[in-house]
Length: 226
Ligand SMILES: [Mg+2]
Image 1 (cartoon, rainbow, N blue to C red):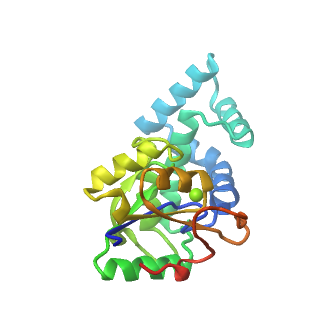
Image 2: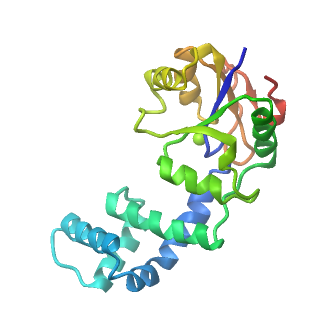
């Protein structure tokens, strides 16, 4: 019997394109204005210092902005850049300019399970802080109440089965009492190896059905019955 559900975000509850097509261009466009308006903010000051250290030389504000834009274009995963983008997105979500997309079928099913008393947990490679920001500003308003807990890569790599063992221990259930939903076949395999029940979500535009995949695949949460 399923006693809890563990869900991935990108490609599962929400389209993958949101990060690439909305969030990244949003931070790139607002970078200059955000930095110039927040030069005296201690957190921003510290981030700008870290950027200089990363580059290894003094940079003017304009040079810093150019460097950051180049890093975004090159999809560099540099900590001070990620921190700054996080601050820009936070401002965007809080002002209502950014709204996180959550597929209607996912929203409705999660709500139904929650109402039935089945706790729902998130496991995403985005930080717990980013996950909470995302679900508190969705197209369906604040959905934080749906979730009993959040896990990110601090718990471990999503493609390693021991991460799922750890999550089950943390939730306090047997692995086979937890259903894991994700679009990523490697994550599905890792969770199944740890003993969790699994269903792969195949969203149109984001993924394709895999022939002979050993686990159930569905295109919508509506096809999942606990
Ligand atoms: Mg995913």
